[in-house]
Length: 113
Image (spheres, rainbow, N blue to C red):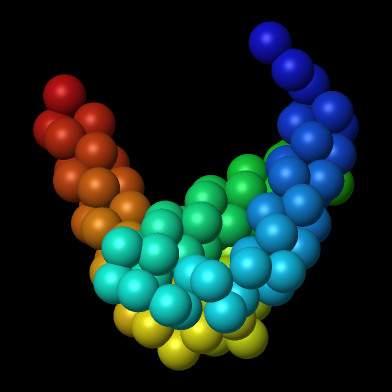
């Protein structure tokens, strides 16, 4: 299993690479409905990479904020996604809400046990 430091580095590098590719192919991703969905998917990957990066950064520093990690990652991912296309930002918002809801459900289920 990768440590927090290496996971932090890998998630940051993947974030930069994915965002760069999304910027390079901005016009292609906005050309059709299928490519727009693909752009939303890559924006969701950007969110997950940022969530991993921020979580590992906080773990490395010894600070844990829980929901703060999700909020920071969501804000940065929404800014990055809206930079490429405004449609991605709508798809990413739905994905972020689904992740938040899943975390709430998991937490509620874990508390009951």
